[in-house]
Length: 377
Image 1 (cartoon, rainbow, N blue to C red):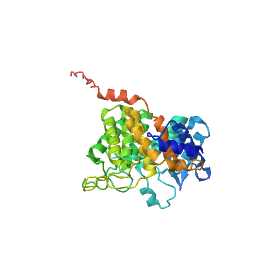
Image 2: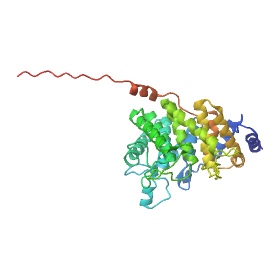
Image 3: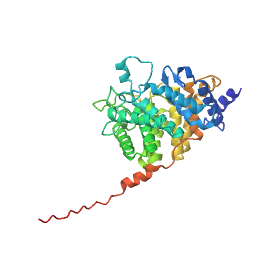
Image 4: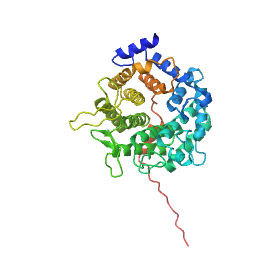
């Protein structure tokens, strides 16, 4: 009955979340907790760690219920995916072929795991997490990094910028740079945000993927707008650059104007037809959860309720799917748990050391005058 009441509340509330969002979050988190299976590595599905479930566990660590223990157990299992020779994580433990494993070391999964290592290090003080984070960063700098800014999406494959994978690794990169007080990597993250925007933004479609000829390679993707949007929001809070806030707003407005269906969900891609209308496209639960979380974070950054309300409408569109299995184990509920949590606690950092460092970078430095004594012979 309680699940039915939550479903009715979600479906009937214009904002989608309602006053009972913390209760819904707790129930979704309970689904994720029930999906923990130590015999398979913890929060793991199909030999692949569920990063959102680990993140949720680290965020819930102060509430007991073995959250931190389960997060650490899963991170220990995930450590087995680390390439001990060159660094970086393989995406999954199910592949056996060495060549396939090399191709499967991706920017998006490594970016998310980098951020989890930073969170675990901050939560526990265990330097082993810092050491693993250093190894991921070292590998990414040697293998994925483009000196002009940004990262390629995988160790082997397309070398063009992909906004979605860049958004995820830059989110982790910023978290790492902030935790380690590293101005050099902070500057590279900001340089990368600028380059992705300059090369991939195309009015009025938004962020697009381009081929080697710089032509648009495929339809504009929801994930590209969402993941880069989250990176811009984090950069805006850490560094307070106006352009990061402005770009996050543009992406949020784009989601509301071109991706949101009349019923509230977000379509996975947005491409205009010859008549000017948006072509029909699928609406996927996992991408909508990530979009809802981004919009809640953007609302917290800008104090603009429109974004949170749009996130609520997307959540309401999936209300039946979200609530019908509240009593069952479901690791895939983690993204919705994080989105619902963000509706009342976006978890954005405050002004950090990066602001002072940015101001110091902008301050002209006095030239040092070196005087040499004349040598008399």
